[in-house]
Length: 544
Image (tube, rainbow, N blue to C red; front, top):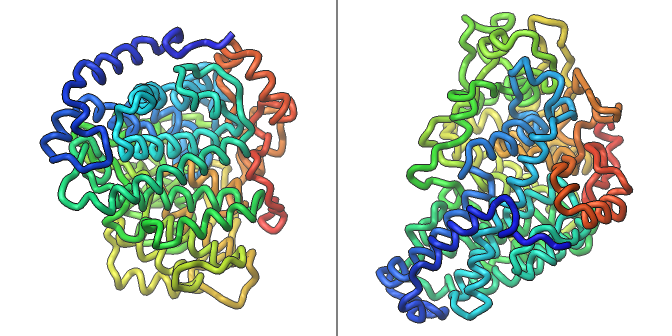
């Protein structure tokens, strides 16, 4: 039987959301069109609608709930991306790092992803279906939904999507294959881009919903750039499994006639809303169980990367491990002393007021570099793979406030490589990669790919889901093995997790659809080791 969302455990959220949203709809007709209202009209009449957009934005990378961020990024995606890891000694036996997360962790992560975002979208869809929501507003809602679903499907694979789109309020419905989820996301994103691009071209004097836009302050031309950048990211994500459509979508996204992509630090997508504390600050400062991972630290130190002190804080233990000022901890290492781990490894440099990064300009430049160098596509923009690669590094340095002089030295370095790892115990490991920073046009496409993805991965920090997804898709950058694997799948020691199992509560609440999805789309195995639809590249060149 289909379980309706308001019959589930989030009934309070839905009811509260509905009360906030539709307590007042007087004079809504004044904005029920693509005509641009005055800013006073928009802010007055759309106050309650605006609250739903606030919710949608803060549920892309979940920063509306500290605990939800912890489960999604701090405990799962950031360790899998080898950006950050955990230091709790009482989590040794069960955690995502060792592929044996406890039931409550799995339930919380899956429910956060599926449940937190949809109530606001359902409320907006009700208005849109009745013709009571301006088309530009619905297009914006669709872009935000696709951004959230892209993260979710890239964690799990198959998801309910087409049935949820019917907007009945039902979440416990039939799953779609990941191929069909992506197909649906592209269709919805394409329609939204056209509508919002047309609207933004004429919206030059007012900013409807400005005060509810925590990213761009009501500048919908920038949301068009965000949407095209998201489309480019998705196109590259499917480039090995569906190269024909990947090329079509990528070229459409890059075509300037469609509104452009994120190309400057001024266009970076980040949550800057007052009152939203950066959850990464809470992870290291309040919770105290988050530290730098070995991989990100060894690459930054090996490259003598000036972003090192932008990303991390020196350790507190008088120089730390073997007198290392900055140090990272192996992901999946057994922690015998929590106090030792906390005092010897670096914390992320994240303050309460820092914005939450959603999409960087550097990522887009590296997407262009890969499109130009590794897939044989003729791009509708000027520039070579080398141009885009160097632009990606420059934009990342710009984003983190690194000097132009440091940039020039870094981009031309053809000597430095990843450093080896060592600590005070017996977990030392040699460097996994010999790739340098300086671009070389005369190497193979595979070596170019490793160079692009390694720098892209550094620039993606601290967005764990994206760093992990690129490693799964390409095999790069090269990571250390996992010291402790508590699953039955020995391959995870080398390759890491390919996905996260569904929350066990889904088996209870949606058993028929869950069982059908696992049987049909996952080969009967709801495990960490099942590769996603787009994860099909031969990675033998990367040492897999």
